[in-house]
Length: 397
Image 1 (cartoon, helix red, strand yellow):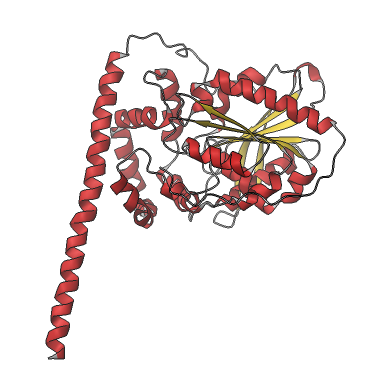
Image 2 (cartoon, helix red, strand yellow; image 1 turned 60 degrees about the vertical axis):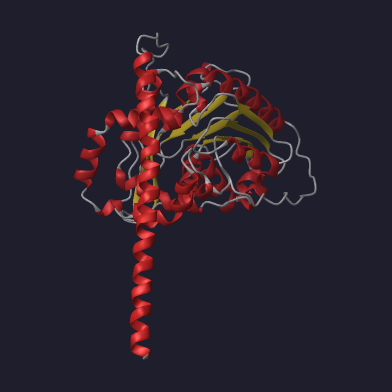
């Protein structure tokens, strides 16, 4: 009797697994259909705007000059033992010493070209005089990548610390991070709060997050949002496929990649096609191995407590109301946890708001840098440390 019961139990369990599998498949297919429908609409809109004059058709993306280019070698816990980072430095005009060194940290699947407009527009700034440092994060742009294993935000924070040590070992610092770049700064604050207490006089987070990315639905149906977390182990296994096969598929679907870049990078209906193409180029040069190597650390990122190190430091938080990757609510949460921070939410902007609305973003950065310079020149004032507000425990859409 017991054996017969076990058999029925086993059959019921099997049927349960079979029943759940179509549900998961249906959810994935449904999400794919939704994305495909959106892409068809995007393609239609793109065709309608082909004749529109493009203000950035001749913009020299990726060609801005640097006063100094160097390589910073950072230790790695994964093979190889070292990763070489590509660094470019722009000195203040007139050969005068800088008032501040500003380190720009780019986001996931991008490179230092993300800050093209800020680099171009701040190069002549004399109030204050700034020394600008740009670098490609591990696995991105012209920097080296791991030969195996996963990347971690903790390691990215240590890489940033090494860049600072090599190119700006003294003097007041300002850190500007976009998306994952902001998370890298948080990881640095978590590991080296003394650096923020002694040298960092300003931090700006642009389209970034202190955690909860595993709850963002990226503009997809909620059913997909519920299954994306269990899919992370599957996605991290993609790098076990033939890299040649995956990269070939990416090239074949280049039009789709362009449209998805426009969809997820920009908030306006008719962004510059040259600008979208430049961002898509940065995306496409990030290998599949690097992409999946970062997924787990991004989904597990949770550094609300690390913001404690920024207390009393000049802070600028910029978000965008049409950002589908790091929604404006994430910027609002960072600002809430940092009383005194300036919060700017750009209307109509997407995840690449620093490029799409670069005039507005750069103007806020300029005023922020002036406040940071004044703070660095003022005598230090000791104030009692306060506990930060508790992070919201809420579902982010």
